[in-house]
Length: 258
Length: 346
Image (cartoon, rainbow over all chains, first blue to last red):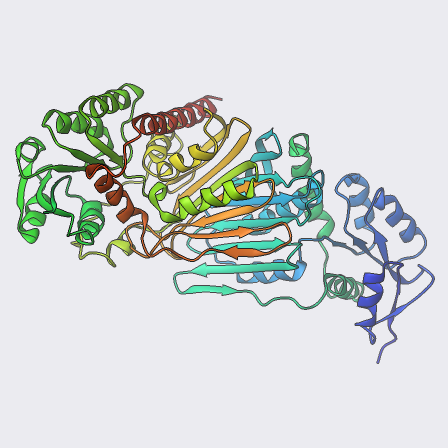
């Protein structure tokens, strides 16, 4: 048995996940040689850069804030593997969807987000992530409008695929963001995430019926740590930063309307 | 004694939709006359039903046994045929959507019906679906402020559903050539037709919740046939997406109402079939999904029932609402077409 990789973090969620990887991870005090979990609030790219300077071998960014400097992110992503652990966007489901995607592209995409008042950026960023995965390319914003407590945008997904995005704010004090993304075509894919219901469901329908991808019982924190470990071991190339940057570019094009 | 119904139009929609629907209401309504464009379909349908058949609408409108007229012809004929039916003294008209393609024609048709007291129902079946009243009742009871609306339709070829409610000829559904979406004038014209022929299923219901004049945010066609349209009506934003898929998954036709408190999804069954009402679910902010039971009836049956209620005097026709519904759709169709033409020029 090889020695476990060490983990440095203060976030209880990742410590719990570490306990679920006892043969591969052990907690450490030092960043040097460790997989380090960086809180995604505020200027997390600078915090991540400091951890790299301190010798971190890989980073997991928890709930990365979208208002980050993307040039700096691109620079640090070239130095060590970085996993971006996004609240409503799971890499394992994306990988499964990608592996099973039909040859034909969808004809159109739609996304609907329900967000708590004033908290739309994280949710919309992750909706844009699903649109990128289903549309097989990042989104470009063509037009957008805000009215009252809702926003609407016309998008072009990968290769010019028509897409649109509708964001609705709940009344003040109500929580529970939800994302629903649809890829419309001969095969129809629907991604639903619902924070209040602790739900993340992917359903695929075609002429033979519908199937729901297996529910993931592994916590997203454990998944992120496993991906970081795989990258450290050379088994998985990570493109989280690249995908995140594309989503954030689109998000910023409509941020004036959010 | 059932009312005698004359069907103007003998296309696949009549065969798969109105004739089977009227069979469910045989105590009250019976087909007595079918007229067509001269293709032979009306004669074949008439022979099968054992009723009179003719070409054009004049003979049908002169038929004294025809008390109720169903206008199922191409949309550009609807308004003039309403006027002709009124002039012929018919008591009631069920006109397939849209009422008319222009403001002037819509006003003339409504004025004529109102002046003569002719009952008029437009076949926007989603508006008549029992689920829609349920949805409106929920909105009233919850007090949620409507903030956004979305209608998403992904529709396989109609033939799939024709075959489960009728026995159509193999050649009954004509194949249309693919449009040249690269030509903005062509694209604008087709999207206008799609708004007035397809989106119109839901526009009267959307107008219930977002009654202000629609202002386009974006509009574009979707190949092979479809549209993506965003508009604003008052403070409410509306997202409309429809695409005809070549096959594959069953039809999706979902209207979503996003309020300050919840999201209501109304999922309609595929066109033509009689599978009960739409399915209504409410997603609450704490993540619960509350479902309402399905009603055994559907919008196709209920639109005919609405006409019967008007005929027997238990309900009245709201002519002003019918006109405003028509004008809302025409305004949206024109605005979407304009946006596409202008986008093409740029």
